[in-house]
Every structure is written in C-alpha cells, then in structure tokens.
Image 1 (cartoon, helix red, strand yellow):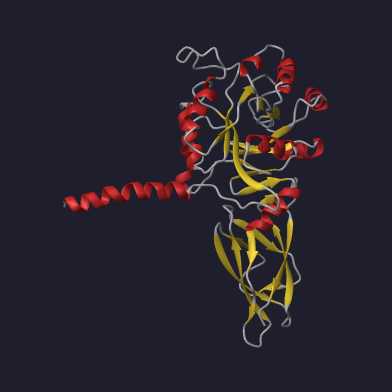
Image 2 (tube, rainbow, N blue to C red):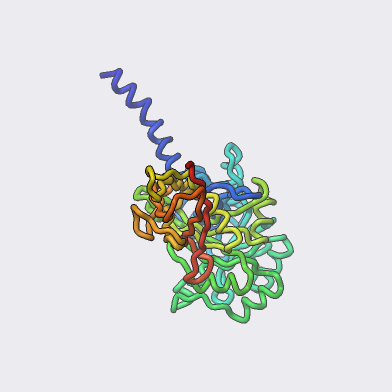
Amino acid sequence: MKQVLSIILLILPLLSISQDMDRRIEFPDIPGYKTLKCDFHIHTVFSDGSVWPNIRVEEALRDGLDAISLTEHLEYQPHGDDIPHPDRNRSYEIAIQEAKAYDLMIVHGAEITRDLPPGHANAIFIEDANKLNISDPLEAYREAKRQGAFVFWNHPNWIAQQKNGMATLTDMHRQLIEEDLLHGIEVVNDITYSEEALSIALEQDLTIMGTSDIHGLVDWQFELANGGHRPISLVFAEERSIASIKEALEARRVVAWFNQQLIGHEEVLKPLLLASLRFGEATYEGPSSVANVTLTNNSDADLQLRNTGAFGLHKHTDIFIVAAHSTKQLQIKTEDQRESFTMEFEVLNATTGPKEHPTLAFEVVVDL
C-alpha cells in the first residue's frame, strides 16, 4: 500500500504539470516576426481586482504568455482602506520581483479612469504611474505621451458608459488621435467583442487590441476547465523584448485572440493563418481523380474553413473545422490527375473587418 501511495504522490505533480502545459496558448511565428502572447489589461487588489500581483504572474506563466501589464486604476481604489498605497507603481514593483525567476516580461502600465468621454484608457510602457494621477484627463494623456507610453481606449462598448453597447468615436477621441495621444482600441475586452470598435480601428488607423481585463481568476472567468481561453493580443515582434513589443504595437502588428476567433489587420492575420495551416503531399486513389491529402493545423485555434476554390470536396461539405493541433484528412475532386492544384478557403472564424473574413490559397503538390 505504501508503494502504491508513493507512486500516486509521484504521478500527481506530473499530471498537474501536464494540465498546465495543455492550457498554454500556442501560435506559430510568421515570416520575419516572433508571435508573442500578451495581455495588457489586468487588475489586482491594488485597484479593483481580487488577487495579489503574484497570482497574475502565475496565471500568465500557466497560460504561456510572454508579457503582461498590471494596469491598475489610478483614480478608482475600492480597496484603499484595506490596502493603502499612495505609490501607484506598487503592483508593478511586486510583479517585477515575482517574475524575476521566470521568462515573463512585465510592462509598466496604468489605467486612466474617467467618465465618457474619454472613458477608460490604458497607458503602457510608462515610467511613473503617479504622474498620470492628475485631474485634467487631457493632461493625463499628455503626461503619458511625455513618458513615451502607448495608449489604448478600453472597452469602448462598455454598457455602463455606452448604453447601446456600440463604440462611438467622439470629438474628444478625435482630438486625442490628432495629438498622437491615443494609439489603439480594444476590439476585444473580457467576454465582449465590438464590431464598431473594429470599424474605428480601421478608419482611424489604430492598433487592434484584445485583453482579458481580468479582475477575478482567469480559470473561472474564461472557463479554462471547459476548454475556454483568456483573450489576449498576439503581437508580432522582431525579437522577444519589451522594446520590440512596443515597436510592434505602434506598427499595428497585432491580432486579437478571443473565444476561438482571430481578429486583426489582414497584413498580419493572413500570414498567421498561412503559418498555422499546412497541406501534405497529395496522392490519387488508383486511376481516379480524387486526391487524398492531409491538412494540418498547428495553432491553438479551431479553424473553421469554407471551400471557395474550383475543386469540390469528396468527403466533407464545403464548411468544416480543422481542430487545433490536429490533422484533417481531405478528399478533393480535381476532375483529372494533375501534378499540382490550388485550393482556396475562407476562414470563417478570422475577421479582418466587420463581417469580412480572409481567403487563403494553397498550392497542393501531388505524388504521382
């Protein structure tokens, strides 16, 4: 019995590690860039969150993230009586110490918390959060600019401030954009997606952001035990560094990953999809013109494809799913045997604009 108990005690930690590895978010790099997984909207007890900063670090490590930012509300401090902290940099300092032993980048940030307009905004890559804690909202944004911050509009569709749930650009936001004080917008926040925010991002040339805005536990909020995932920004950086992340955000090389959906500018979203999907070499069944071929998906997204090409499918309907990190066996009717042929698919759970989905073309080589 003692021997059995010893074996169980040895296996349990391995099972725990395996489960943590299963939840790690994984997407391939794209040509010329590393795909970094980032969450730049996070709260702890140092504003209105429910956990200590070390828990945010541990959650990020379990999710396989490369960078996070603890963006505490500057003005809203509901735990102030229990955890008084006149220094608004405190949660960042604790997270930095906690992350020292790990390969996780902590970006210094804070949330400018105001009524609409301008609403809430995150300033990241800042130097001192205390200097942003000033009464005039425009001056808070200008101070963020003096510190070299990247600033994005938070949850512009938040019904507590926008009763119809529709992100709407105001004159104040236009002024912020004209003065180079606003650089991005959350198209995804927590459990919501805003088509109007995506339109604003495209019209105003803003960076598309996806964040968790987590206040409680990541596992509970996004139902990780049931196959869910936290919403994040996939950032395409030249190297794995904070400086390179900032450059990528400024260059709008970002895709939001949310509820099995990928949302981003076409110039980075299509390369990500092309890097995620791979066709194997095709073979024909005897003298027939039905080609057998494997389609592999090496990303975390269950990709929903619609066949839009010239050749029909023999085994599936025109719409099918290639599950994350799996291989799909396809049979393609090419009319006659040929050395190669082209397949085209619209990716239905990828979005480049309101109700717009990218189309991918693949050259399939046949082993005759």
